[in-house]
Length: 373
Ligand SMILES: *Cc1c(COP(=O)(O)O)cnc(C)c1O
Image (tube, rainbow, N blue to C red; front, side):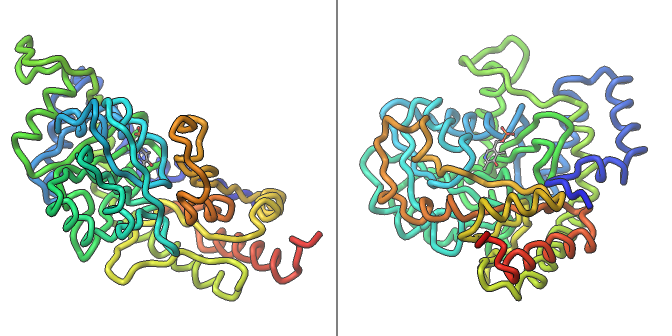
C-alpha cells in the first residue's frame, strides 16, 4: 500500500465537475484579479465565519504582514509569538521592522504557553501573535486578559485552523485580527497561493484593504504606499465552492483523527494528540510524539507510508535567528519536542483501511521492538 502524506488529487476528483466549471466561469468573465468572485468569497467567508470583514490577499504570510502594518507596528517594537510555528509567523514581524520575541510551548500541547508571556513583556511590546498550530486552538482566556491589561494588539495566526473553536468561539475572532492561509494543503485550500485577514474592526479592515492594494481604495487615490497582495478570481471561485464542503471535510478529519487515536492507544511508547476540554480541534495535522522517531520514519517509509515533521527545528533554533543567541534552555519544551514530533498522513479522504494499515505498522514497530535493531 502507498499512503501519501496529503492527497489533493482525491479531493479534486470528488468535486471535479464543479471545480472545472467554476474555473471556466472566471476565465470567461475575465475576472482574474479581485473583482466579483473575490467579493463573493469575502462575503461568504464573513457570513459563515461570523465576522464583519474579510480582507483577501495573496497568501497567509502577507496576511500577517498586512495586519502588522495596518496596526502601525514597526521599527523599535516587539511582538511576542510562539517558539514552534512555520517561519511566516516570525518572518513577517521582522519584515514589518519589529523584533520577534519567542515564548515556549505548553507541555502536552504544541501551542504558546500563555503563562510564560507576561515575563517577556517590555515597554516595547505592541502585540501578541498566538498560532493555532496543527488545528488545535490556543487557550485564549489568559492571552485575551493579558492583551487587555497591557494594551496590546492581538493577531491570531489561523493558517492551520479554519473553523477551529476555543470555548465554542471561532479562532481568529478573539482579538484585533485573524489571519488565514489558503495554501493548497491547508484545511481550506486554493489551487495556488491565497490568504485573508478577518476583523470586526471596520476601520482596520479598510486600512488593510488599502495596504494590500497599493494604499488605494479607489483607483489612483493612493493615500499611502502599500504593497501588491491580492487574491486571484480563480482562487476565490475555487474557495467559494469549497466552502460548501468545509464543515463536512472538517468532520471527516476529526473522525479520522479519532480512529488514529483509538488504534494507537495500545501503544504506550507514543503520545497521541491531546485535545483540551474547551477545544475543537480541526486536525490540520495529526502529530504524535515518540523517542524513536528517525527509525520509525524509515520503517514506515519502507511500508509505503509518508510522514512529515512540523517542525524539525523550532524557530529560535533556526540559523535565521542565530543573531538572537537563543539556547535550548530558553525554550526547553519546544527543544525537547522538536526531536520527537511526527506528523502522520491525514486528510478528509484518507480511508479507514489506510489508517488501519498505518497504525498496524506503528504498533508492530513497537511490539516487535524494531527500534532496537
Ligand atoms: C501556512 C502557514 C502560514 C503561511 O501561509 P502561506 O499561505 O503559505 O503564506 C503562516 N503561518 C502558519 C502557522 C502556517 O502554517
